[in-house]
Length: 288
DNA sequence: AACGAGAGCAACCGCACGAAT
DNA sequence: AATTCGTGCGGTTGCTCTCGT
Image (cartoon, protein in one colour):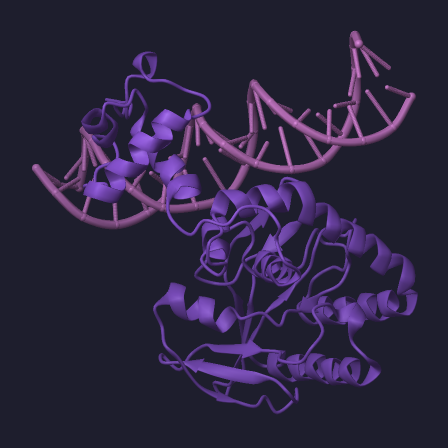
């Protein structure tokens, strides 16, 4: 038996909300709350609307402290960073931007930021020939270490990469690549992902320590003692913006990878997603 | 002024998930 | 364990507005 529809679609109003409907819904919820049942709500109010539609209207437009339009540079940066780390988890991204809704952020991304990012990538490719060569070399080296072909579709379609050596030193690298058409290199993000990991895995991240190979970084050991999460404070968002010193440090890390891989077990968690515009996203573990 | 193309955005659709039964 | 149902979410649609010709 199939699932019953949430409402009688023939008898509900659709399309834009009128000011009267908004006022009814708003005043009812402010006075009585939702009652924990959106499906029953429109009947109680006397609205010929689907419960889901009421919920959407309230969450996106009627509830207090909603901000619309005019995203700040800081908000742009937060969205960029989170999107590149966790993909199109709009509700999660919205939770980091007070007053913004997932729908607003999704629309803003699709209409503006996506184009901005693509423009930046093209500019980056044009301006940074040397950087590209370095990036190519870096990717080649890492992939070869992992027994992968440089032109295999994408970087291990899973991320982050978990590397464990025989001494149980585990390195979790938040490296990701994008569609080769746009970008051909692994890069290391400097997001606030430890916080996200903490929230989503329900695992406490504790005791930051400096990573021996990367100054200005911090490692977080989870309480199970198996995984390390690594933040790259003070590092550029993109490898193309690294200065020579930082690139050398990263090269050192690749060497470190080599050490770890030799005689080690190497695991990476599952799942890849491809955005509608062709970008390959490798999500962190526990985000699948 | 009229028209078409593209951008922006509100709203809908359908699926996944978890709680309840 | 299987089924039902409400909720939340991401993807998509389609309407409205703006701008260029």
